[in-house]
Length: 88
Image (cartoon, rainbow, N blue to C red):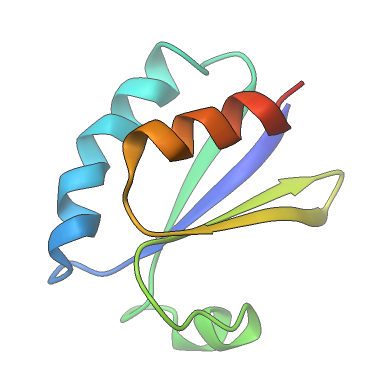
């Protein structure tokens, strides 16, 4: 099991569009292999700065407490492929 943090904000169009896909994956495709977390950059500026978030959406994958991968953008096919690859 690994964790994915989605850094987003409410006024980001791509963030809003990818949100339902993440919800679907968290309850279906990856419910047993990935923990999806969300961080609103407007509500958590310090955390956003700590992880050097420069664009949204940004997905950071963690395994054993360490960052293992980062994806910027809301391409669901690419994101799903990256999740499948990193969750092995």
